[in-house]
Image (cartoon, rainbow, N blue to C red; front, side, top):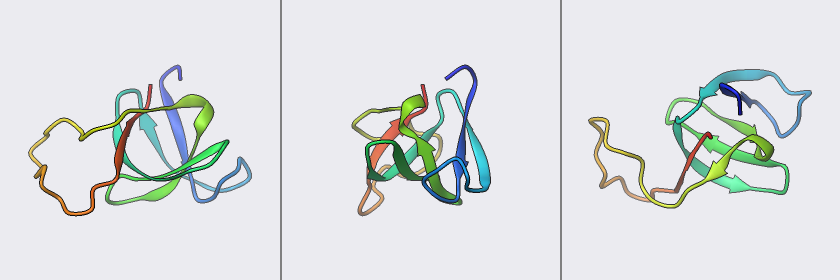
Length: 79
């Protein structure tokens, strides 16, 4: 990724862009397929291309939010 990754409403480039993720942003990974990853940031749920991201295990760094959320999914960072 040069600077950002598009979050789309569906798993494909033909779907609408909902928002963008910047390098280093953390989101919850909901599902992984070969080419697309379903993610949520708590406000928006959508799909990002697996080609431009890496998945890292563990919790996101604390930014004033509780680390004791129930049912936390894996965390991933856009890199």
